[in-house]
Image 1 (cartoon, rainbow, N blue to C red):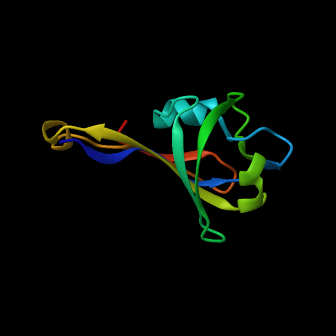
Image 2 (image 1 turned 135 degrees about the horizontal axis):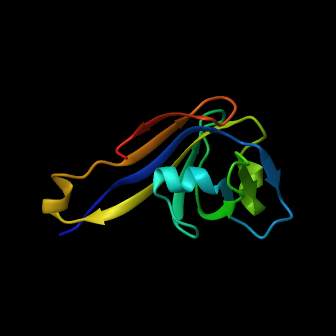
Image 3 (image 1 turned 30 degrees about the vertical axis):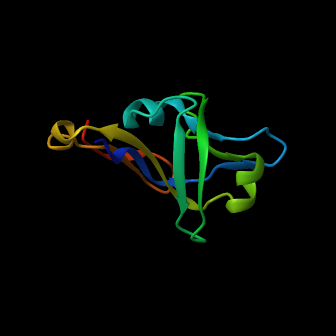
Length: 120
């Protein structure tokens, strides 16, 4: 039996852009992806701390150092620039793996600077 556990989290990311004309997904600074262990095209669950919205989409890379967190396509309706998000990915683990698993978590400040890292 496999259990689904939190794999990665980007906590309190500030939305920097919202584009309804884009085909979909969420663009995330590639430095944040590397620090959190998320992969491009990975499925993510996103919660918006400002309005309580929760939605699933997938990751695309934004340029390193850009601090980009962009809601694209339909997800642009679920938040606005400045909203703070929690972005999560999950993994399937065996009971033996569960015993030693620690998710990779990065915490961002209001300017999308990494201020804390855990599980790295």
